[in-house]
Image (cartoon, rainbow, N blue to C red; front, top):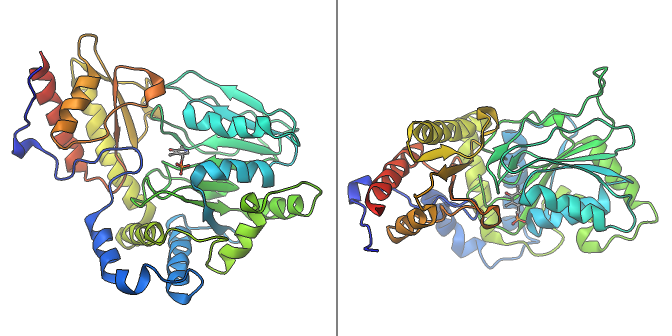
Length: 376
Ligand SMILES: *Cc1c(COP(=O)(O)O)cnc(C)c1O
């Protein structure tokens, strides 16, 4: 197959459309370069670095308009580490999990393997859909996922309610790794809203951040005081104590922290979550409208309200090889449009985080059309 060269004028200004690590804005990098000589390579126990941790905590509080008593906690290991941290330090006896893709299934597995917990109640649904949580009186933590990155399904976050309208007792623990900053949320509907900075926050990986309600902080404290053995690295109370001092338990990646702080401030000075989410709204409207009008492309997620605003999954008709499209795009500097591999579909996956220019998503659709016409 001859290679396809996209005309320069069709190309997006930035070719990064991956679901994480995702596009890092050059303005954030310039800010990093400006402080690098006095910031990088300095002690994480001194004011210079602690100030940046403070900026991150303040930036998160502002972006999500934290209600009274909610706290921003952070530590090393990314969202994957947080599944084990929550298993050790937040589930008292039994959890419920909505499992509808690669990421949402992982927390369920962690809690299932824990010998000190009862088997979790796991509700699954087929790829491209999401199940609903069911209020149950014996559940002390509900594990939800705001945006399932592997399938491009988003769901509304709300506390599970019984038939009579009363709210379930259990903590609502939300994996918002790819949603936080790009999709609106009412934090009062959650007890733990956790994420990592390499998606909407256009930073690097390796860090987890959790917004915790007073009830969640209390739960962590009670479990910490119980008989349960908790390895220090997974000890949420150690992380809480350190976060209150604007530091992490062990050495954090300083680049990750600074880029994260820059993106938070970029969102906050421009209008906060409403502004950042509206950028993803604009990008996703463009993408899905293009796919619906196309004769070869279709949004994978059937229900429009479940189609993710931050990670779009687009199926291609038989005879059109999505892998060949992704390969041709890559050869032209448009990278990471490949689908989540285990989903095994003839699909492209396109991230539309707030840092990505909506006009670039529009250009990407033109590039895809151009490639499809010439694939033959
Ligand atoms: C990316 C992602 C993760 C994994 O994050 P890490 O920081 O790499 O551990 C978990 N959950 C969701 C929904 C994600 O998109």
